[in-house]
Image (cartoon, rainbow, N blue to C red; front, side):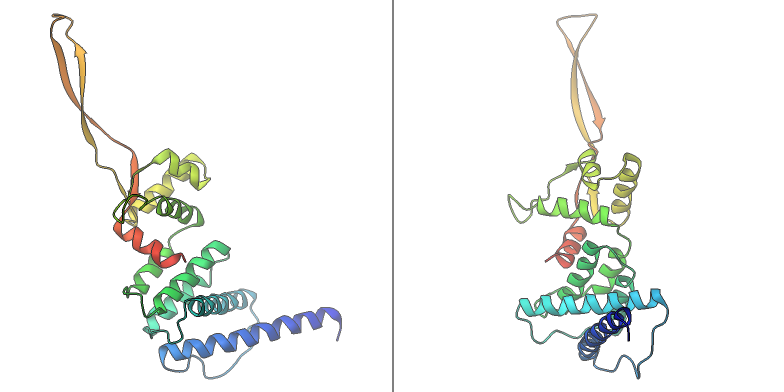
Length: 229
């Protein structure tokens, strides 16, 4: 066996051991066998997706261990399979961590939320740029109180996304569509100007002004709590 084949065999054995560990863990969660036998994955995409599922599970196990969780709660197989299926397509490391955190937090008995399926559907519709914006808003909220959700200017959020202006605007629109952020309501302001016919009098007018600012919604806050450590 040449060196190249030996390396492939080592990688294969490593994934095999990790897969066994992951499958054993997943079977405990759903209370039944996941697969009846073993097979060879010849398709490269299938292999990558399978490896991603294994990696997400292993990382979730490590996260739970770090929190001292030895008995994760059981979750419906629909929730588990949906989460792992969506996560298997992800190749960005930050997004992969989000999926691992979502799985770990879902399995944490101390977590009062049982909305894994909903959060999986939402996270699957987010790009790394959108997660970066949400994370920026999240870490800069709650600094004054547990209810503090300040508004951020659109141009500031677009800049944080590191996207072109046109793309940044679409990103904001998508976050609004998913109801992860909410727009600051328009406000009435008073403007005072001189009366040209009578300098002793002033004319006061009111004008509706759009703030073009956004903050995390309550739903957005809960999502961030589930996908970050």
